[in-house]
Image 1: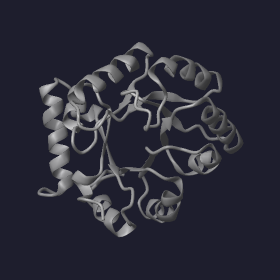
Image 2: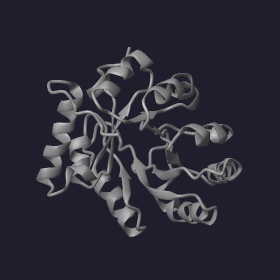
Image 3: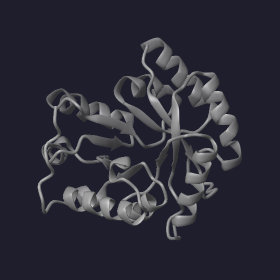
Amino acid sequence: MDQPATPPDTPLADVTARIARAAAIAGRDPAEIRLIAIAKTHPAERIAPLIAQGQRLFGENRVQEAQAKWPALIAETPGIGLHLVGQLQSNKAEDAVALFDCIHSLDRPSLVSALARAMDRQGRRVDCLVQVNIGGEAQKGGCAIADVPALLGAAREADLPVVGLMCVPPVGVEPAPYFALLARMADDDGLPERSMGMSGDFETAVMLGATYVRVGSALFGARD
């Protein structure tokens, strides 16, 4: 089914145009960059207009919130892809594998084991990205940079389909060095996907190699 054209003069059109401009500056094909509309805390009635405008890739932070609103939306509109971009508790692995098409927050060996068991039981392989604590911040989730090779090895041993890396740079500092580091790490490990960049910095992320950008407020406006 063809995806409907994005109407002009909407936040979605603006973000899409900005991605295309940043890609052109970097000499990249805009088709290489996929926009994830981050719908956390937004109810189905706020999401439906974006679906009508043609957006098909959405992200959520919490499994329970996604379970409450997405099955009906997905049933109404085939072709929606749902990504988990927030921290995942191991006891929610079964639910995450059942609902999401991609998990961006693989960050520890215990979660590797939980996801592998869930995927084996359900007979479903869900793409995963390793979340890297790129700024070494104690208050943030993610795998320490030094521990990424071991975690990737454990994930591959468990037959998890790890396709890339994800990061959230420290707040209030220039994000470019962190994006460049994540891109280099992905390259070094032969991983094609780089999930980086949010509403305030996605253009920088695109210029430095992002393949997924995670945009919320620039599409939905400020959260209540």
